[in-house]
Length: 271
Length: 271
Image (cartoon, rainbow over all chains, first blue to last red; front, side):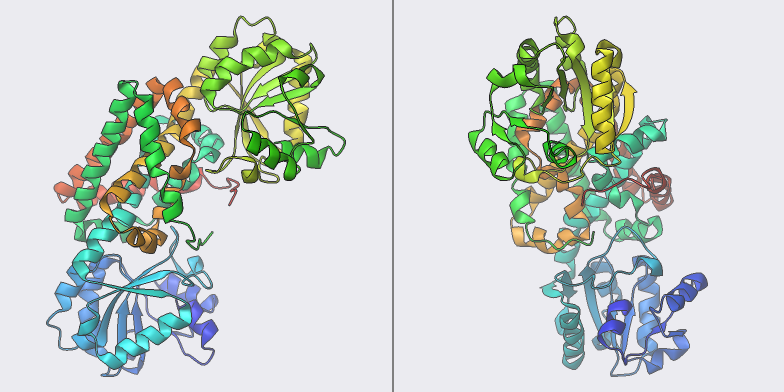
């Protein structure tokens, strides 16, 4: 996001804060940030964007909010919303915070994973918008409009339920697919040679960061377990159709799911 | 393949045979073929490449082999090998046939899905090479070299076992992921809006043709059921770690699977 903001607003000054000092150096070298900074500079900020694992988010956001000035907008970019919104509900500076989930990115992390124009045409889910000061809502919307994002408003519980199906389950299915294949194929060359057959795209998310994803699954445990149970049941049903030699049934299952083609038409891809 | 062959060999003459007459018209209009043809012309062919669903392959290949002349090379491009090789083992023209699985393609089918240079750097698995006349092996290898393919030799049983893990299971996981999400999300707009979060790539294969995939699962039933059982068990284990609040265990599962990143490095993508 810093990359786009700098490109679109050449006069902006971006302060980078990170516990990982080599990432901070890299961000500076890549010209993603202008200054290596710390919480000591938070009082200078006009907008603070927090992109950290969702468990650390819950410990850090109250501190960050405590340091910013009254006109400062603080936004997160986390993949879970209920726990965070709940933890901030009585914060004296709650009105400075806007709960966001910009749905964009790749399986890669760190400064070198930044992509120009990543947010163009993508969706940003905003939760509990009414709890944010109106002027700061406007500031946020102006930025997201500049980035080209579409906005959807949702309550945190609905967000976490939907995103469990459409994102969190995808990551688990991908990680477990990768595990199943790695466990079986002692010869990694066999995996590589055959991966052009579809495996590469279904397993892409299994490259994702465990440090980022473990706390997401923890915070959204209840919804994630529910999606997993439904997914496992569907796989069991498919297996049973195979065991019953019910190929008409298998055809129908796939044919009914083909409509995903129409549903997803027009999604902007990053790659 | 016709598209590449024409580009690389401008003097070649490509005869197209298809039961779907609109596909045949389309192939002609797209300049993928030179002539709309039929089995009546098979005796004119120097090379015959058969790309049809694997169940029809078993009924059609014996007929095709029966019609070609003695110097003609016949190759298939099917995703299963055991049933086909077994069905042809006593065919009087077995030596004219080379069992192939060029591992390349997308979720789309029909003439308009053809991609220039699709096979460059991809793997072609050849089975029972010793059963093919040596001169015809050479003819095939010259073509695959021209297309830029890497060759691997395997027996049909090993092929079907490996490909069940790396390809067939990926398709089922993708179809059932699509089904799970479609069943849950009554509002298709929600799926679309959130699909940038990883869903789009894990569900890509659920756009694939049921007519192509049903007979693949049928012919490779035994291996596919085995992969499904292992996959379901891994998903169950992951769910149990969640229920046990064993987040260290969840981190380790993902961290161990991250090595897929290294395994897949350097795979040429189509998109």
